[in-house]
Image (cartoon, rainbow, N blue to C red):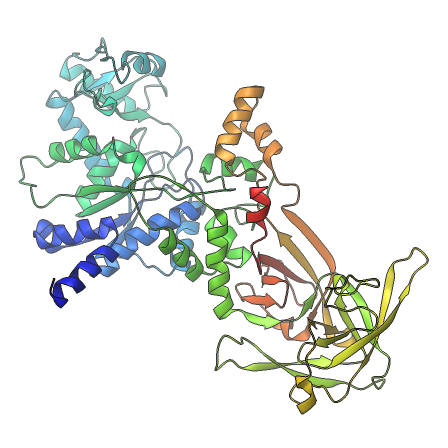
Amino acid sequence: MTEMNATESSEKKSLNFIEQIVEKDLKEGKNGGRVQTRFPPEPNGYLHIGHAKAICMDFGIAKKYGGVCNLRFDDTNPTKEDVEYVESIKEDIQWLGFQWGNEYYASDYFQQLWDFAIRLIKEGKAYVDEQTSEEIAAQKGTPTQPGTESPYRNRPVEESLDLFQKMNAGEIEEGKMVLRAKIDMASPNMHFRDPIIYRVVKTPHHRTGDTWKAYPMYDFAHGQSDYFEGVTHSLCTLEFVPHRPLYDLFVDWVKEGKDLDDNRPRQYEFNKLNLSYILLSKRNLLILVKEGLVNGWDDPRMPTLCGFRRRGYSPESIHKFVDKIGYTTYDALNDFALLESAVREDLNARATRVSAVLNPVKLILTNYPEGQVEEMEAVNNPEDPNSPVHTIEFSRELWIEREDFMENAPKKYFRMTPGQEVRLKNAYIVKCTGCKKDEDGNVIEVYAEYDPHTKSGMPEANRKVKGTLHWVSCNHCLKAEVRLYDRLWKVENPRDAMAAIREEKNCSALEAMKEMINPDSLNILQECYVEKFLADSKPLDYLQFQRIGYFTPDKDSTPDHLVFNRTVSLKDTWSKISRK
């Protein structure tokens, strides 16, 4: 193999299978060498981490191959859709770092879709059915048995046209009539067995109001919308594989004799993002919000993008995670720890290091001059050679973590214990001399002596000690509330667990959820202290509380009441637990 061929082969292997398809289509000159994708969310809820994978694919493909990705809201079900969701979806896409070329709505095409449906009726390819949904489901048959024809399948064209007009005029009640495409009731593909393409919905639409009463189904609207817009690559998740023949058929029907061989939208499918300890169904997430099991769609325990953003995830960490899991043609359950590792990897390079004490006990340096205050330099991010520094005050009385002191410590305890030296980060080496307890035996003060010759940067500062502790000065710090978030579910696969509980106990989804919720998913600490440097911190600031974890200011935070959310711990603590 020549050097050039080897390079080309290596580049080809690094492409995911969708990229390989796109390159092949471009090489063959399909769609005039254009690449146009679309991201088509339904505005019936907030985007979650699963959507992030589709967003990265749709926008990423367009960007890589010099094309355009449009945003199209699939607003064909007014009973569940809202402008609130439209705005939140836009915000999430832009937070991930993408910008759409054009903004479209399926409702933009309601007239074209209606005209297309009328044409199908006139061509004998669609008919109005008056059966109930149960009757239609029963006469569709099974994957191994053909269906039976509807008694309305061959009703006169003029009759179907008249009834279809009445459906849209509001003269027909919901559920009483539907429009079905006439295809093949014996097809091995169940989606070909006269699928429903229109139904009656009398709820006002968030954009079109009461103009329409008959609304197209997803399978009917989606492919045609792609065709109307000039989409070249319609990228979907794997559950749409059996829908693809129907997608292609409707595109063939709508083309009206035009030659589409090399100029048509083509649907390709990739695997969904499935995560352990995560429940992604919008329907179930809505239950959590409405029943008050979480504090809104942006609760940091929610798998929504706004929830992850509020928790302190960076958009770059989401990209890293999607790149790690990749795109395949088979579904798999990814470990939540992999997402957290991508977050740690990203935040380690960008987070500002600060001192914070979450469970404080007072440390008094008995030989440090009373009233003296020194300013110690702290590097914002040691991973960045050009990182700026900030100052932190040092004084006689400090707060340290309660767990960093033990009166009777085991041999390999390298933190603070009587007779042992430790370094106070960015400051001095100190030796513990004892402690004071209350009448219940609780330690309320720890005592130590500092060595004035061991300040960081001094020659004797290189004296080796095995423990380094963080601290804040009692008189130069700020009180804060810290919210320690953890996984919302205590079971690895909440979806399967919920189904099993509901089947066993014949209970509602809400009741099953209550059994699965992790009681320790949120722990609020009120008596915490942080350095004054954080007085002006804002939401979306990325912070590392040294030796504790990554944090971000919450939207509830004010100058008078600082609130910080834990993004992720410094180390993975769940993998070991889940293996037990």
